[in-house]
Length: 478
Ligand code: ARG
Ligand code: ZN
Image (tube, rainbow, N blue to C red):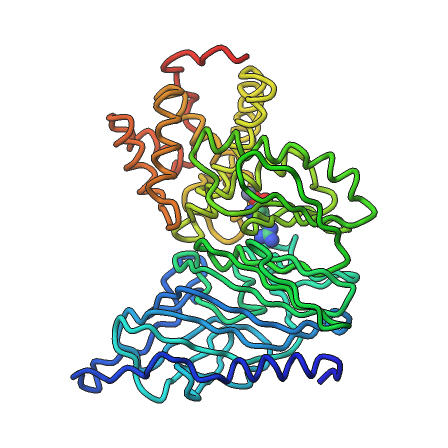
């Protein structure tokens, strides 16, 4: 163990070892065979082992001490969950690292590891609907996941130069903390991270507390609204924190590399206006804060990590900011129900990014852009966006034909009903998940038309459908 972090480590262990006040549930009159083993997956078509059945997480408290130079972490994650079945055992997703200890409701629990599954057997079984707290104490150097289908990124905890950044979509959260790693189980989070000076820690939500220990400093971040595990992030490095004035009470704070801070402050200066634009269009911004974490190097992508999207230096642009911000309504607040339906995330964010441009540059600009992508899609003979496999998760079909699903709906029902659809869809599924079938059913409901065949062919047919007739003219743009 690295000596300088020993004291912090000891503190974490002492805190983690405090008995938790929730009493072990007294086992009801169930016979032994009525207790189940929580399943090691939730049936995702692409990632069958992601997530776990039998419980529903409410809150994660992730407390880590990080040695940036050695890229070592040590600490404990505490998970408050509700059993949804009577459980004799259950699993969490965790890949790599060394688990030192697991407790359930303060009592040491037996655990085994097999690949990404950490199976836990509490000393007493858990009755259905009881709340229980699991604390996993662990350490090591996280290894991000390499996936041949997603060769542009290593998912999870990354270290490059003197910067640590977490980009998990879709699977990487399990490289740095144990979780129910599927978007269907969202939870709130506290992230308490200790690093050496002069490093700065940014994470999801609002910075609640900074404790100065001299050579080390602890940052406590709070994510008070539900968040899917793939949207958790931590960024550690020598960043400057830039705050922007806000007109709506959403705290705007960016983390920029010092040498690029002035230029980036200019680029991101429209953030407040964008939050207002999307808020008017869709419904109030769902979180307490927003801001960009821009890496001092290119990444080739950005990722909509909740309230703190990560940008490669190469993609720190106003357009990409509009895309990542739009994800906060569609993707983050309303989350995809399974990974093969990722068009619900990317189609929405891509189209909403265009709506920001339409707002700035006019309807003709939007129309000509959409037409260009339509021609590109028909020339490329891309697969349908609706039920993709692993290699098409971030494909042009998902982004651009996904955006076209929304544009086609808008052309078909007209601007007024389309706006009403966006607002209703957001209001109904906010803080939860939605599926393609939910999307279609709501389009039918709001339009009072049967659009099932029309939308299914845009979403699932291999052949690109014809561009619909405009049902009503666009209002003149100003
Ligand atoms: N969801 C991201 C976006 O729309 C793409 C992220 C790809 N990278 C990743 N680490 N999964 O911009
Ligand atoms: Zn996106």
